[in-house]
Length: 421
Image 1 (tube, rainbow, N blue to C red):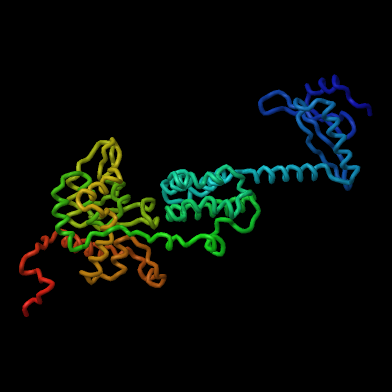
Image 2 (image 1 turned 180 degrees about the vertical axis):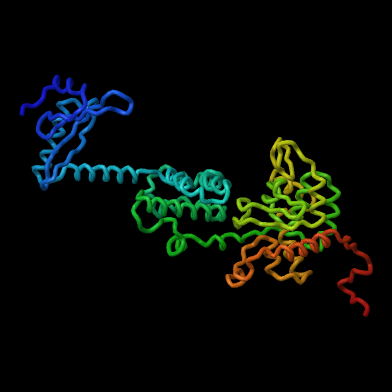
């Protein structure tokens, strides 16, 4: 059968069908999704007694002479006992692998966040992840060593180049950068973007031999906690302040909750009839709903708060519809007790409960929304111990409202003189 000419092929492109053009080469004409017709070049060949059809490209892209040359090259593969379709798939796979290995570390980091952020309990975690390598000037400068490099090329020398400049200056930041780099590298290896094997950012058995432990570089600084004996005096001073931030801080102290939990609290979380505040999981550190008993003074604080149309928050901020700034209580503390921070009152409450009450440890830990570390104890403490915690928080409120102890000659014992018996 004679080969078709270019003119004959152009005529056939106007009617649907599959037409032989030359040896192994066919023209396939089909209706397109957008209307009209589309024509493609098809290679037909037999191998091991089985017929195979293989696409060679669009007729609008490749001219007849180009399609014939493509068909000729595939016939050469058949003559060498190689399957053209298998060769094509192998080439596509190799191209994908090569392209995958050129993906940069920063691209992998973005893809990692996109893949995992749905499982993170709040949006802040995703935001923190995104700014890990861009947040602070030191972290940004360090990560610049790898951000634009193919993830497949990152080795131990580059890992050290990232971490060493910040390891001693900001060990907490450096440790966080290391952990997240390790996770990104593991993800990249699992996706085939780099060869599976040792992770240059892994700590145990690798970087721990090259860098000092973060705990040895700098001691962890815990939040300063106001001694519980000073709480009554502090509460008198605090109640004398009529600002919203003062009421938020008082509510924080009375509930022993965290700053984020308090400033983002909204009115529909409060049940005045039950005298309880239910904090949703996405605002809790442990990711679990927490029901807080509200002592009478905490209820009074809430009932006296101003409200703003369109603003659901208990403690309204300066911007319309927004909550109180997370810096408001911190600034208040700087003026009242320099060096102390709002979060420290959780430790104050913990010390008071341990030293001045007989409440069981698990009740106090539940009040603080801490996860019970002991698995056996956790199995027996599945309930929320709400009524026990209600009594605990009522006692805490009474202690906070107790009269301040003033120093007098009767209750001061000079160091150099024994008190008379």
